[in-house]
Amino acid sequence: MKKPNNISRIEFFPVREAFRHEALDFTEWLAENIEALAERIGLFPLIVEEKEKQVGSFRADLVCRDIHGNRVIIENQLERSDHKHLGQILVYLTNLDANTAVWITPEVRPEHETAIMALNKVGYEIYLVKLEAIRVDTSAPAPLFTLISKMRTVSKSNRSGKIEVEELTPFEQETEIETIQSEADLSEENTPLLRDHVNLPPVWCIYPRRDQETYQMFLDNQCIGLGFSNLGDLRKIEPDLESFRDKWNKKHWFSPAASTNTFTSMIYAFIHRAKVGDLVIYPPTWLERKIYVGEIIGDYEFHKNQANEYYDLRPVKWLAAFERDDFSIEALKGIRVNLAFFQVRKEIFLKELEDLLK
Image (cartoon, rainbow, N blue to C red; front, side):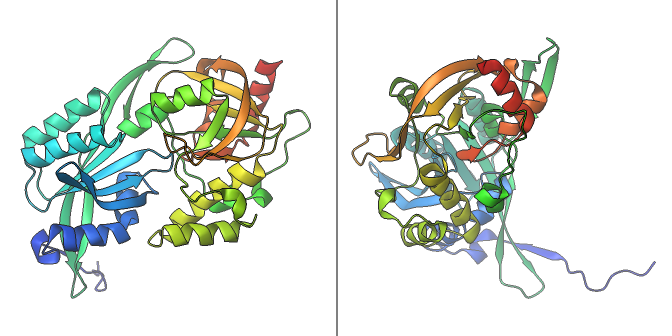
């Protein structure tokens, strides 16, 4: 059998040859190419908020936001993992009120991997990522990221009472979200009309930050919000998607096109596509197996002095709370979408919701 002669081999070489200086070379490169990491570890898209963030006498390499508005701390190390960087990660997580951290290192000590696994079991979400430098033939060097933090095994009961065992990453275990929609999926033209036998107004789903403060604010203050736009009063932006993209790119100039499209499509939908009278569901899966259902009762509001950075809000009236087990497994697939805000279009979910609301 003839061997293909147009396929090259990857060459591995020391990380320090590709990136001489951690802060000046690697962190700078990563800030401008954050999607290269985010896609490899399942956190795409990420927004870089700040580089070398001051935390007391320390500096966090990168502070990011995930698609739900959760803070993500990225700690880079160009040598073998050590206690110092592990300690710094814990300092950053607690002082910056972050939900997630990513520790990047070319060599992980077994005892540090064990420590990360133990921390993830008690509620932290720390991704341990191996960094390697590669090139193909005479190409420029490139980083290769490999996720090595291990999945956790969890057990749960299904509707029949049978125990199921799943291998889930920390993010999947807490949110039970699988699929990310494209910009096309979010656009109004691609939203199919409901069939005649589903008699509901448009239904939206919101997955905000996974913290107690957000949970209490939504339910106690009768509202929903986006915790990541930081673009000022969104009513001052022309009500078209292109204007929102332009505004986003001025604030996040290094944001890749795919991230820009995803975030701005959600923001635009939250402000302009979701109407008064539409329904909204809020499933705080990290805390409890309930699905809260409410009605949007007011237009967009901007609260610039909101302490928890939820500047962009919509008032709602919560109508009901159902158990997730009230829905079939097939119906729940309709809200398993890795977006902070989206329209629910799976008809079986909408039909089961309508029946529960009667």
